[in-house]
Length: 226
Image (cartoon, rainbow, N blue to C red; front, top):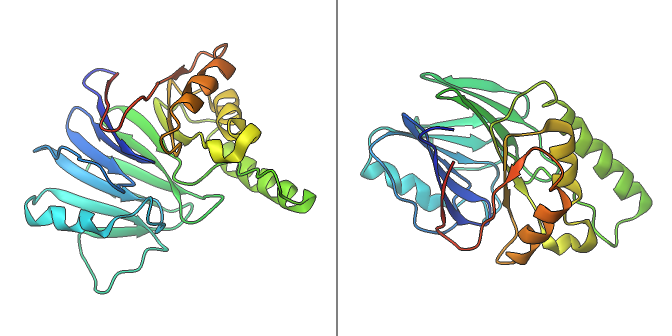
């Protein structure tokens, strides 16, 4: 995990600085510090809390920047700096390999191999088990969620960004717990929790017996060094 610096922006937004690159995921708001490194900006889907069109303005001051967008994001005009991806598609940008997986909401999730690391950003892939769901909705969601997670079973993930959403009430930890149990990432970084930082502490207690290290987030723009 040498030379990895992470900045929590907000919601599901993060900046990840590896040895040679900078990755920015699902920028919504916050103050990302753009570096001089080659930069790839990801947007997992078009919901406004995951995609802010202002990210396209960054290239006016930065030449070495490219974008990976989910297939559902619509633009007014073509842009050669953007690669659109659908579930189960793969692409390569220089020495970076990117695979899109599905979601249980809109868009995709991302699995990235870069600078000797494997990074997973779930986007809105989660076990969305709402307290008022019907039995059929519960069954369909569980099957769809587990189907995507099982695609990662043979993958050694160093850093995973994954939803821990307190709006799900008593089910807030269900997806994250299952992900850790099945995939065992080295680091698990919660996201999509709004400003309910207490939910992270509760989640950490639930998964304390696993080898995965859960990173505690306590403020916007927090810097995390792994």
